[in-house]
Length: 161
Image (cartoon, rainbow, N blue to C red; front, side, top):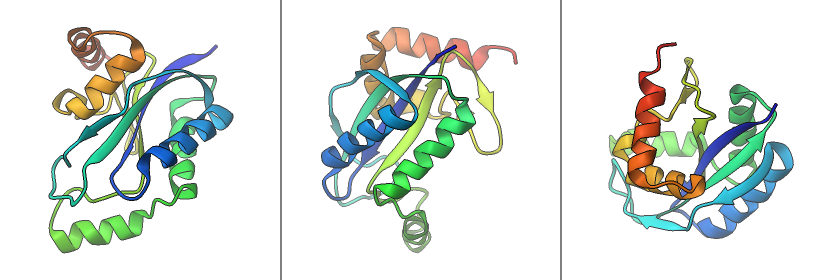
């Protein structure tokens, strides 16, 4: 059985569009078929004072993998494409901020219509309703309006596990 996953890619350091295009190819090779994607979205940094705008794009993927496996592969893809979490951590600590500039970030926004809460993974992404830079691309990748997207997230979050 294949599950529909929505992954948000983004970054604000270097050639983000090129890196996200490479990530899409790796997602397709390792995780599953990319069946749709959003438009490119450019937004100001959220939650910190970053020097550059962020570029984001959502991917709708069909996979046979479990959510934890998808997460592990996304972390590997990020590292392969140059993400350095230690450097980001140092930047956050030195700047006394919760977020930092990044070369690439790949987040699972949705995994089917499942709510998943573990120490390392929360789906739907816990802040998606507060982040238009994630919500709007997700809705575009799913081919639904923003109101429908908000209703879908609310339905999943309110589902009794």
